[in-house]
Image (cartoon, rainbow, N blue to C red; front, side):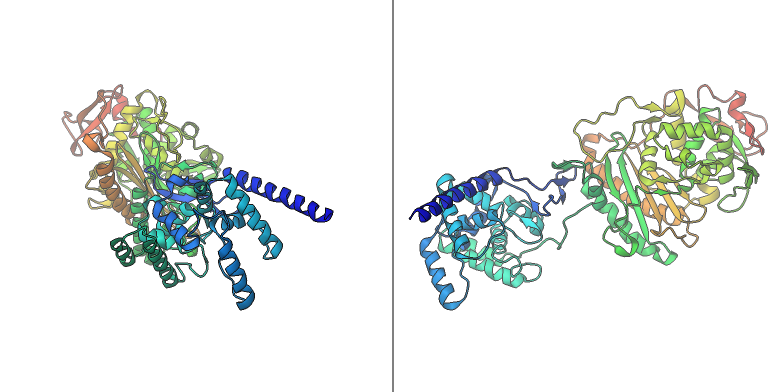
Length: 639
């Protein structure tokens, strides 16, 4: 008797300890952190350390159809029993003994206890523990609390625990948005997540759903019309495994916080750009191109609105998971606008003539002879023509005129420490140093921001974006210089020497754009902007092999043009209520337009003009009439 009494005491202590442990553990359960786009659309649920998807919701945040569906199929006496349905338990015990078939006699409380006990063993001792703990738990908790905890703990397959996680996994919505039919369908799964896996055994799951609907009707929890409507409703599941949207974005922020994260991404923009990349690559495969990346950034705030690191994250043949948007690639001619902007700061004008004639430069005691893309020379050309037509020889001469030291200082000022670190030489004017698409797209923000650099872009959304005053990257006349460079990048006539009048850089909407191709045809780029956003596109191969002589004009610019027009239309309709947007680049007050002669870069009123007259922008102190406004850069690079 002493021994039996001691065992009873030990059993009592153990039951109370387990009960307290279950109550305490569940009340502090963690939720799988979620990643959202800027409009609250779910992008991803982060796995917790124990490799489970969990999102805990309060009882009043679980829809009544879902709660009732579980009760009628799992434990119809839930609100009346003491935590254990002894009649049902005895019936199942006898059935198991005589038929050797298992019987589901556990109440919702017992099922919850099993879930919390973890490594549960099927023997009499543990069955007694389960029953006693269930009875004890029923004494210490309200029925609503038990149901809440059960529905947040039960397993639905696919590493999903709890109704909220399962609802978003199978239907892509919160459980509060489920219909009656969807609620009953979801409640059918936990009985056997393998047998009732809707992706593998949809019809089995559907039959169990109909049983649940019938039980709801029998319990008078729904009427006949609701029953028939739910039976007839078509169940549409989310694509299996679709647990991650904008995957390269979620990877960037995944370890940022253990709490929910709202990103700056607009999923609508992300999807339309991603779709454009994918459809365009299919058309470019015949010229040995297998991948593309894109980044779109809000010009003012620096918020990244879209980032696709490949045309398809889930394409193993191209290593789609690798983020080409953040990797270093050869930028081709896309740095030229900044080289000419620095030239304008140092006295050049858009009308300055540069001789486009082959020249030998000495780099590390070796000869460097840059050539234009079309392998031709054009004599004296203006800065406008040189930049617009992306001529290589004038760009290298302009960089030499600026000086590599000053150019390196500029790159450090705008956060591109990797360029001088690569010991780049004059070839950097043509893309001879690595830079990422993300950094380059962000760098182009200086032009719509009046020549001010505002730092790195951001992927984490904040209602208050601290821009600060920014840094003038082109000296005291950064605004004026940025306007003139933008005007050139909008000038289709200035592109005619290389691209002709019909090209993929010309858009129907307002745009200022520059393309670039690396000398070895491994990288093609197009970066364009307006007063509201910047869009950058890279095209190439994941394994870094060369494309088949394809320039940016027929690859990156092609994709960029299509994506830009769609992004512009969406942005205008979604972000520009009451005409709040301004896509133009405003002319500063001290920038003036003069008629000049292209032949000698002089004023139009000169008696003899060797070329043609056209209108050009100048800013103080470099207005026409001063020697510096009309000089040429000679063959040897000296002004």
